[in-house]
Length: 271
Image 1: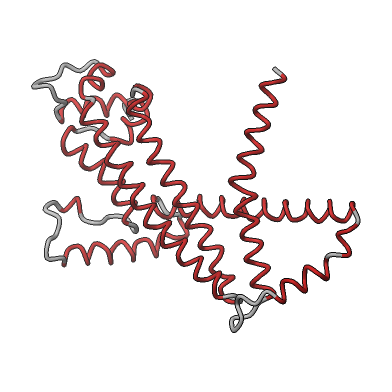
Image 2: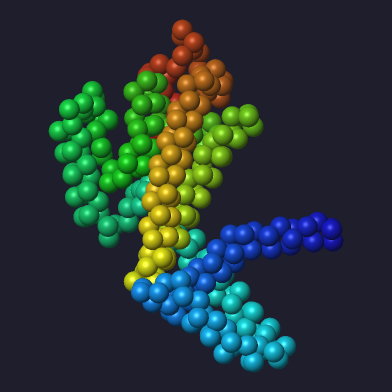
């Protein structure tokens, strides 16, 4: 038991360092540059050197050095926690639903996206596939449910948790990878957003924030698209598995909309 607890503590410390402290330290360094440097001389090291020289004598005492190190680590961890909270909000805004207080702008953005899609020279062939959410990612995830329902009569929101429990590990692995990529993209976007205000005082931080946020959005779209494709594919290639889970007798080797309606009713518990 002692060895297990030691191993667990090492893993937790490793996660704490990699997810919170190290990115937080980089952010604190950028914040220090934003405080000490100017736009006209963004890479002038002399103000940084002077600040370190000024703090040096106080750090010669062991107690002061320990307190300073602890303060820096706590500040870095706090920045990391702020980024994680912001990343959760980014995922909420990307995938929806948006909070109640954001409903008015969500409706405006959705109408604008739907209007642009309707005016496109190549509009979607089915009205239900037009934009119906404020973000591309939310619409891409919604389309999984619409497409599966159109083909099989199944509601993926009801089916997916049950299907996920029955999927073999080799099918779960790429789905987990897509979800992890989506979460990491949201974290990258969150860090980019935190760097943007520093750009008001030190323009390299603003540039870094813009690049990180843009890369995060791009990766988030790719991760969401991969997850949506894999979730839909899991239903397509596991017709027999789904039939076995819910006692269906397949005709022509596929689930029909009538079969899907019965499964939905069962999973809804008659509600």
